[in-house]
View 1 (cartoon, rainbow, N blue to C red):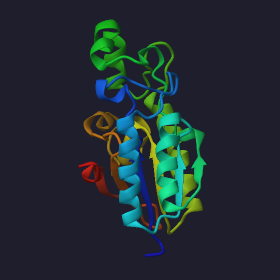
View 2: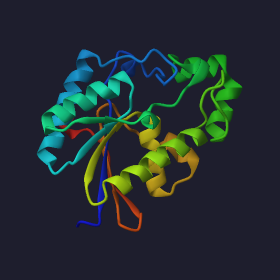
View 3: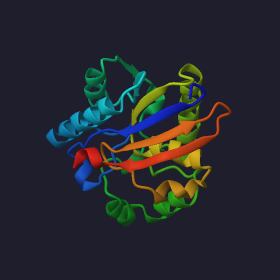
Length: 208
C-alpha cells in the first residue's frame, strides 16, 4: 500500500543505568550501551533485517541511540540520520535518580509532574508538553519525507511513548501507563490522511 507510511519505533539497548531504572535524560551523563545493550542492539538489527523493506534509520543524537542505530543500519546497509529532537527529555535535578529516590527528595514536584504535562521536573527540566511539541514535529517531517515507506526511529522512553500516545489520541497521563522496554520494537502505521494505527507495542520477542 503505497499510501501507507510506517514508523518502527526502537528504544535503544540497555546502558548500565537501565536495569536500575535510573532516569537518564538529555541533561545527564549520556552513557553508551552496556555489553547487554550491544547484544540487544544486534538482536533488534537481526529482527529488522528479517522484516525487510526499510528505507531509513533515524536516531536521537545521544550515545546509546546512535550505537543502537549504527548496529541496525550496518545490518540493513543503510546510513544513520540524526535528529536532535528525538533526544530524551531533560529530567533536570532528577537525572540519575530512581523514582523512589525522587519521591523521597522531591515529592511535590513529582506529583505535579505526573498530574500535568505543563509541570517540569525539579531544577528546570523539560515539560512533557515541550517534548510533545518537538516529537510531533519530527513525526510530521518523517511522514512528509518518507511517504509510503517504512522508517526505523531509534529513540528513548519519553519520545517513543509520546509518539504512541499521539497515535492513540490518548490523554497525557497515559504516557505513564505503557511499557517501552530496552531494545523493544513498536510499530505505528499512518494512512495518507494522517490517521494512525498502532500495530505493535513493546515487542521484545527478538530478545528471547
